[in-house]
Amino acid sequence: MEITYHEEILAPIEIVFDFLNDDEKMKLWMEGLESTEYPEGKNDDDPVGTIFVQTIREGGHSQQYAGIVTEYDPPELIGVQLQGNAFRVDVTYELTDRGRKTDLDYTCELVFASLFYRIIGVLFKGLTNRILKNQMKLLKQLSEQAAVRRSPPPEA
Image (cartoon, rainbow, N blue to C red; front, side, top):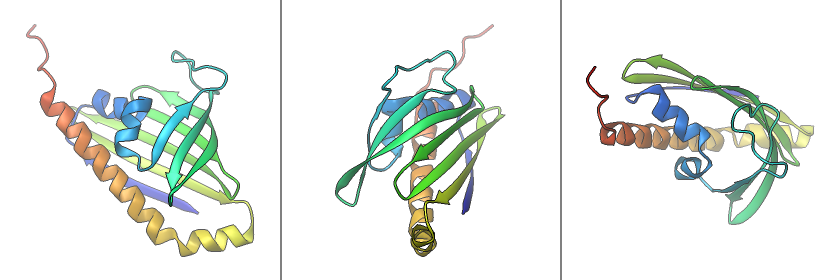
């Protein structure tokens, strides 16, 4: 099952990318994200292949998801794969620089572990879309607020 989303954000690309890339800032817009751990360490220079574990609170319970960074080209692209018991999800955030604006294109491919989980996934697609929209709206709001607070570039 594929989910896509597009958002125009009134903030420079570097600010939006920072909210997608910084573990602490991700907690501000990603509902339920409690922590991101790197069991083998984090390679900030070339994170492709970096393994991580995210703990996310869902329905009152904390769930852990194993992940790996699949794509990384700052400030335009971040791709990750998360694995849970019921599904695997491949997520891509593509950013396009529009000067003082940034276009965000989000793609998520869900692969379910069984027919049962696929049926459940289809039944909960509306809820999944609402959560995504809420998260993207919050990401937009936080990025735009940060852009307003940012100092103007120095005069040349």
